Image (cartoon, rainbow, N blue to C red; front, top):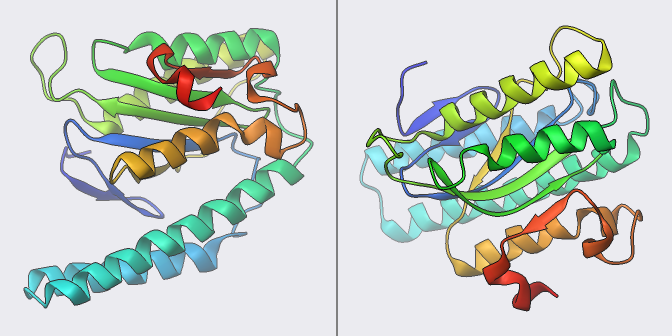
Length: 224
């Protein structure tokens, strides 16, 4: 795939060097097919409208209003998406099993300091939440792209987990759900959402008790 700032699968995606992201991806059977098609279509329509406004240099207030509509719709989509994930109790594999969780943690931290800066992550039974920042250049001076990081992480973890589980074929849903972090307030929300995922699912009373969660040490005082 050509490396560019904007690309699309079922949903629009944005990638900018030096940008922080909140990313979620799931097992291929974690969400029923077409369950969220209405949200996806609405997001695509809003994004198309926004692109037209930007291309035609429309009034900045109108552009900001449409952009806010996109973010609000995206939040509703992610809430519905997360609710479906927590309702699903039968999946191809259990990602929170020790061996699978260890593979994912190894994968999520592999590019740390080389291509990304990690903030937080949470490995659940059928999905992963991840908050991190792309470095502008990697340790070899090459531009870092979001799509490359996600492809690398998903490919490596799938191969390892499939081998342990004795299965083959696609492990992950092709689509990843990435949100551009807009500011410090949004970053705080994304980290808080990630850490408290197992609490909302009723698995633990405190996020620190869930083995699949991690927060960088510099931020511990804000979330403990």
